Amino acid sequence: MQVTVENVSELGRRMTVTVEDANVAKAVQERLKAIRPTVKMSGFRPGKVPAKVVEQSHGGTARRDVIDALVQSSMQEAFTQEEINPASPPHIEKMSEEGDSLVYSMVYDVFPEVKEVNLKGIKLEQLVAEVKDEDIDKMLETLREQRMTWEPLKRAAKEEDGVTIDFVGSIDGEEFDGGKGSDVLVVVGDGSMLPEFEEQLIGKKAGQETTITVTFPADYRAEALQGKKASFAITVKTVAKKKLPKLDKEFAVLCGVDAGIAALKKEVKANMQRELTSTLKAQNKRQVMDSIAENNQVELPDGPVEREAEFLMEQAKTNLRNQGVDVDGIPFTLDSFKDAAKKRVLLSLVIGKIISDNKIQPEESKVKEVIDGIAASYDDPEDVVKFYMNDQQKLSEIQMMVVEDSVVEWVYSKVKVEEKESTFSDVMNAASA
Image: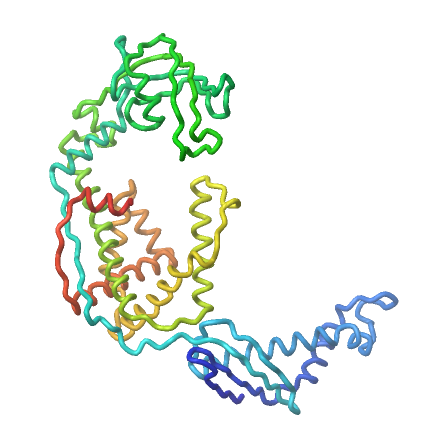
């Protein structure tokens, strides 16, 4: 087999392949002979269709199959021989038979060569934070809020009370869609309803009937109600105040810890520390990746970017579907994912260069450390560890995470890094923003 490669653009290539001794005609006849026993045709017994008739009816298909097989096998061999990893599916330009030889040319894109990773001028801020006693106290308060109950009151409602109501809304005397509710708990001041609505519940008692009026904002989510004035007939069912559980052994048991408050605090701190460590790592890693991507801009082939954009778009649709969102009415466009796709393709090239140049491998101890960290948040950590160690795909994902962490450490060792202190709350709030 003879192979020649020529440049047609900065990233475009044309490869011409000559498959000697292809003997297409002979291969077609062998294929027709092989399929003849299975050919069924009216007027002939199975397997007894004359060879000439089989050739007339199946010759074209057999020829295409033979040539397709030859092209696929020789194409793969040619790319291996020339040590080429095409960035886009090859497109056959032309094909011909010259004696016993099959000659075809194809065009494709290649990935740009990253000759050297440029870190010049990069300055990084490395976020650091720790879990403090006040952070643990806040988390315990959150846990209390999650397990609160409502204590019925005889007095009138005030700010932060829970008021359970039935209501019927109308505009110009006509009820409107979405304006009716039964046994609806409204926590005064938490913003679940319009502020004007909640404020007018203050001073109301259980059993009281009243009417309140509100004007919907001009930018209200329901277009038909924007700027409209509505009145609501309200029946107050109950007024109640929050009752938080005490921080005692019983509360610890509610949270799944039988050994008391001290043990609960220890577990809460450990969980918060794992979450903080993971979030800090992700935020610092993102800053590193953003910096090296910005510093190493190269022209990218369209094919990989298109494929990555399609992947990101489908991923976004799947995430929305998992949240119960109907994505059919959302006008997704591939262009809106192109910038993120370009960045991901670029980073894969730059990271690959760093890994190759520095012979970075996933250290077993670090892989185990990551898996142990994931497993620690489960009830049966040993089972989780076994799951990751026995699932090659999951294990490969962890190994790649470890390699990327090593890439981040390498970048830190080569550029100016300044530590920036933060707090648990700021770090976690930034991550969820």
